[in-house]
Length: 375
Image: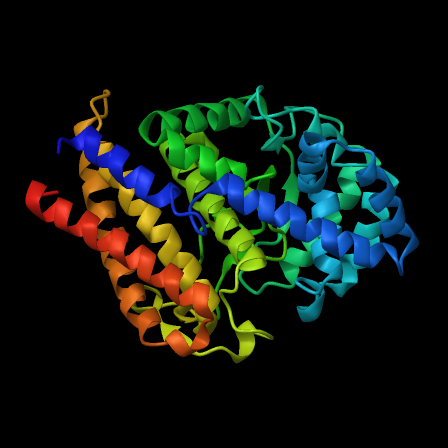
């Protein structure tokens, strides 16, 4: 099997699984779940009743778009406890009122990264943020602060250079992994370009932590990209894929029986992360949900860097050497997390165990291919 055939084969392996890979099925299941919760919430809350009435007037395609609108989706998920249970309650009322008041984040909704798709959206260069935009971003800020790993967002917006780099990054990674990139973007509703306060990115020992990108289950479907990483198309492409794959597993956590009922990250078993030992305890000892999300990403990044090495396009020798190092790093970290997670199967429900085993099988196949090809 030549390099291009191998990449296409592994892409299919990652996307054809009916429960864990097929984004259209995952998103349809998520849509059905949100409709059920919206119906229940509409019985007790006037704002949700307004949302439910609007939804009733939508056709199937419009319904999917409506439910993927960041403010609507966030309001429903916050209300069912995904964010509110651990501090997100501070933003819940604002989010409900925003979603009921007007659909979407208005400036961003009119500017799509891909013209032929509804999502993901991004604010256009020099857009004047509306009241609803500012309210929504304020909610994002509050929910980010509930997460000890989240950056402190200082300014939010974009410029022509960064916006063009984002488009180039999407095109570049789509050329390498078209199906995987489409799947990652299917789970990304909104891309927010930010600056992050340096002080918020220092650990307890005072070491600086450079921020490139972020996502959180508190804000599913939203990718935060550092303005600085967008000036390098390579960094931007990797970050776009990385956070999109995180958003995909956040949707899986919502729609499949993966984590144990009443799961709380603070009470979870921990997995020591040897490559983060220089950081604080939270960053070097991960709960099982974060560890599984990281395994999910590392399997995809292994394929990403493998695709760089097998690409026939003009990629410099320096970039290929960098990709070779990152390929080994991603594979080794994924292999480590797989072994640790398999040893903690009691922390997962049926689909959680199946997801870990499926990712492990794909990783083993990629390892065998890398061994035989000398990658």
